[in-house]
Length: 199
Image 1: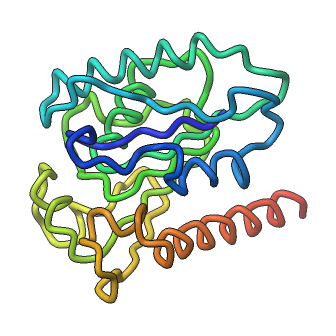
Image 2: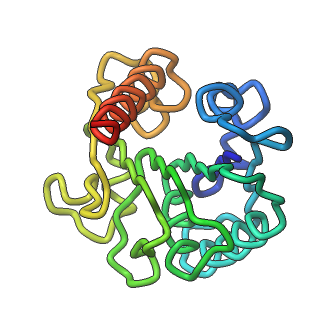
């Protein structure tokens, strides 16, 4: 099962319909052993840029995971954009009915509040950012160089999207070149991890 979580005010910006390439990733590379209802979209409403709305979305995410009938050995993957990543972290912190096997956050602002510290129920956490993303910087608690983009609990990776016609905060999702770049990086990390575990 893969859950896609958009960021703040996603309704106003659009682009989260079924033709979004992330749905294709979820039903392809991330499908695993899931037989049906493999990809779900967390439609959080309201999705304002504040703690109360993120926690409300967290409760929706908790309910969504609890309602899913996981098959034996079925994994739970989450791909989250912007503050959607903090929704996923808050859910892990507050507790989930199933552990998160893979969490990928894209351009997630760093929030120092305890509610956004990941729980011990995340197996693999990848935090990917576009360089020079001022929106990610502005929405972070810390404004120090690099610290706003890196999460100390994750494997961090940054991508230079300056050649894209799309702004850095959106390029990792809507620019095919850079979306494929981070996905390829993630797959290579997975292969390396699998090889190491087999030794």
